[in-house]
Image 1: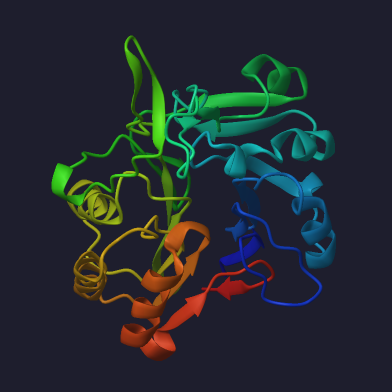
Image 2 (image 1 turned 30 degrees about the vertical axis):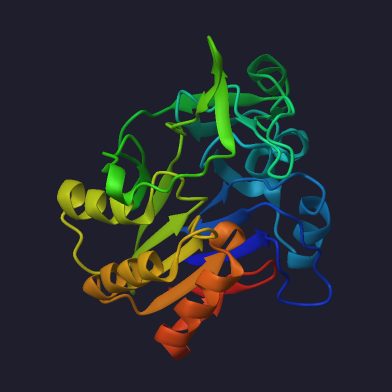
Length: 278
């Protein structure tokens, strides 16, 4: 059995859990445990205790990208695990910035990792970098380095990098997802899908020959998608005959409502405290 337990999310599945803007999930897969992202770090300790999970038993930590709301709890995790492999894209420490939506003339603020690579390595992180899709354990694929078709790539104008003449769009090259082979079928777990859900789906079909998914879980970065674009994602998910759609974090309220209306009983909120068994 494979279990995915949501430890951090904007929403909670029970009153005993704390919510925060961020994402983290514990995977139990083929008798090994993996932590996918670490949230901001504010809610993780509380929710880990509520879930009764043991971070000391982790095989590895996996990072979807370098934003603070996915990496902020990493130092705390390392304090419990000691030396451990941390899998990520090599650009995970990019100096990610964000513009303030209601004050675009203000200097962009830093939204990348809150700790340097050197600090995290001193705390026990043994970084393993992947700039393409690779099987990091039997039946567990790190999905990275996929093609970005412009028409299928979300544009988030707030996310920038420093350029010679001012801020330039951040391509979020470090975006990564996971694909798990479970007894029920393949499960796609997204951190934020900054590179586009449609591009990720195309990649797993073309690169891995996957044509059906038991579940798609996690953050979809559809929070600013117009209804027609959400409809396109729905059609793509139906093309994979997805049995379960469980959204988190950056999906957005309007997109989540549209997904729920379409998928009905196949739709779930993958909120902190929820667990999915395959």
